[in-house]
Length: 173
Image (tube, rainbow, N blue to C red; front, top):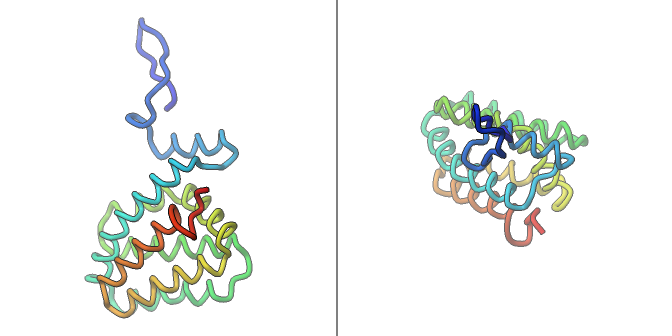
């Protein structure tokens, strides 16, 4: 939380960096009208980039052709979607499913815990770069997973995620 209560000493402002949780981050977003600071965005995207490397590796080792086709259905739906809310939900579902298939029990839980925050980052990315950009990045990730080229899939993930926080496609100004 935001405060520490120490009996017989008082109430103190908590150090959220050392003692906070995802709930703390969501509370901060609510307090700031749903917005994240550049530092928070950078931290979230860098953390996701690191986790996604593990998720891609595990997914590509374990995914069956049926599971791969299931991911493809999200891409098909996204290609026809006109509503940003549903597009972002489908993108989030695509990546959550990839994390779940990885068979690492923590990855999908972490991804799902950050879903509200990730949703805001996707909306910002659509606003800055267009909805087609966000869709095409996800579609490219799927194509690389489908190709079986693990190194290329991991490299693309790194490039597009770090592109969100630096360079010409950055949402941080």
